[in-house]
Length: 164
Image 1 (tube, rainbow, N blue to C red):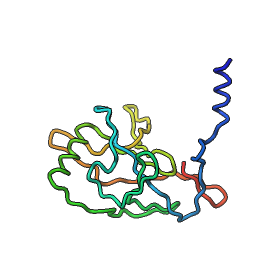
Image 2: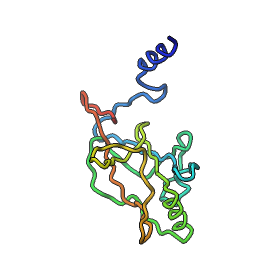
Image 3: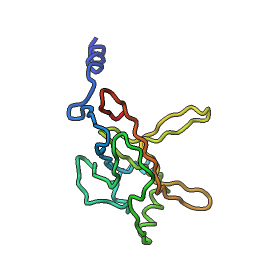
Image 4: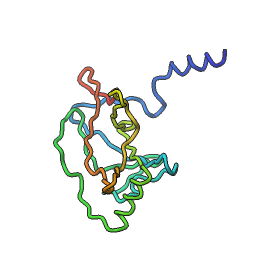
């Protein structure tokens, strides 16, 4: 009986305190925050900027959540643009290679929602996984994913938008 009461109580909650859905106007800035790097091989999470990614002056928002260089506008298609350019030394290359070898994933947050990657199973059925890989490797070497395509799903109602 107590279990059923718990389920009914949970269904009545539609947002967590402090993370209520927010409405945006067309063209309003949408913040993209970086969170962490995780791996299924090592089980040790790291701060996003532990790897030598380009970064702004860091402004920590909450536990391991920090600002990024990405500039997004609600309801606006933006052309591909360079966010930053950086030359890596041997230690930077080694850090990214190690992260790729250990299958680290990047975790971003937009409007308190985790970023995900759309994949397809063997039958072609789409599914999403949280975050995206730092890079990949094959028999010829390692490849850093240094280009990203950001797609934000929006719900429009009465002239305002919500991130979904």
